[in-house]
Amino acid sequence: MQLRREFSALSMAFADSGYPLVLLKGAAYLALHLPHAKGRRVSDLDLLVPKAYLEDAEQRLSTLGWHQDSALTAYDDHYYRYWMHEVPPLTHAARHIELDLHHTLVPPTSRIRLNDEALFSAVEAVEGYSFSVLSAQDRYLHSAVHLLLAIAKSISRINALSSCQGLMPSHLAS
Image 1 (spheres, rainbow, N blue to C red):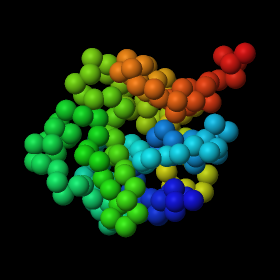
Image 2 (tube, one colour; image 1 turned 90 degrees about the horizontal axis):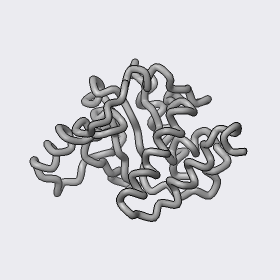
Image 3 (cartoon, rainbow, N blue to C red; image 1 turned 180 degrees about the vertical axis):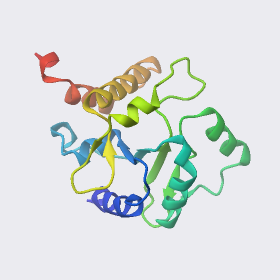
Image 4 (cartoon, rainbow, N blue to C red; image 1 turned 45 degrees about the vertical axis):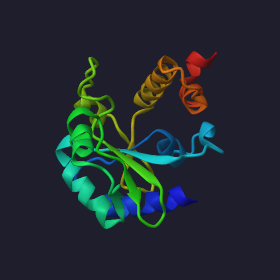
């Protein structure tokens, strides 16, 4: 599977980084072999690093072949970096998969403020790799936020619904 190859490359590139590299959403579910991830199509790879390490993470990703779209304007680049919770999307030159590098889970312009330190302090290691995933509770909340945003935008998001159902703690499911 293509994502397994990406997981191995990312794990090796970030092994000595000294900061957490966190898989988000579909990639995290696949790395954890969660039941609801079986058969899931992942259209992009979402990663999270502490904001202080964005530049280093971008350099490491660049050495692996990840780059911004050359058509991206300086305005667009500034918009992402100043107003959004992620840098502009990166695309792998050879494999054409998209990667979203996040530094938090909500845009800085949002009225919602996250405690990123608490988020990073609760991440869970993924066996066999040097990266992590959000805690089970944070994965569920992150999935629920995506579902609520999708509903608010009147977008049909079966992945968001499936993720919420798959991540629901067993004591809430019954």
